[in-house]
Length: 286
Ligand code: HH2
Image 1 (cartoon, protein in one colour):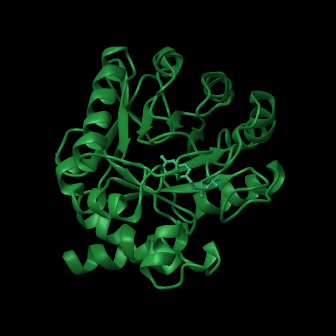
Image 2 (cartoon, protein in one colour):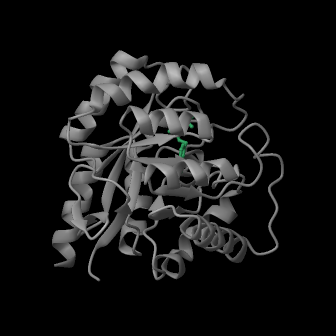
Image 3 (cartoon, protein in one colour):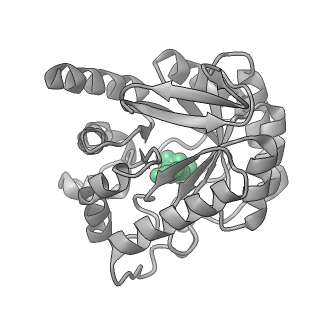
């Protein structure tokens, strides 16, 4: 197969029906636009639901294939928020996007939030805990929603306290492959895999995973990379203390590397900049 595909158990924007399922296909690396509805996200906190909805519409117009709506920051050290708070943040944005033609993902670790978001019009679930709660698999299966399975060691509150792996590539890729097989066997229609850049990993761990990316992208499941504005980019570019929103050029460099190594999707703040960069790369590669 040239390009990428994701299987849904019910009709979604841009999908073609094939038997009893709906397939979304895209030919070159696509973009997931980040829409944080939080006071405290590490680079773009402070948007309430109304401003987040405007922002989501803008990212869709700029070419995002998927809009990822999140109501809980997962930055290192972040405290969890309640189900009610998360729902109050994400549901108005998801409802506002219904009918816009955008594919909508909800970024949550809570099965209750995922279920309410899918009922309100979201199409897939982005779970940074990698489906740790078995009820999440059930929610996705019942709603015919694919799951984006991300690897994280620990929890956001403590994940930077001395992360350790004997073999980071084998452990992270093994976790993703096992989780994917388990989810699909339980009736989840499709999966996306994400090694979780910056989630319970040192700079060396992140680099090892990115260098080994071809091993993961050679498998059957589409792979997402999300390094947008993360701290490792400040370190690599020699400006560790510069504000996170100065890291878009560095983000693009890392993401173009990932696209060349087979990533199907990039989770980004700067959709327009990435769209332009990907187009140039695609033209150069012919
Ligand atoms: N990174 C963040 C949040 N969700 N989901 C996936 N699948 N992959 C990621 O790399 C990922 C993610 C953290 O970034 P951001 O949403 O910008 O910040 P915050 O968690 O502070 O809201």
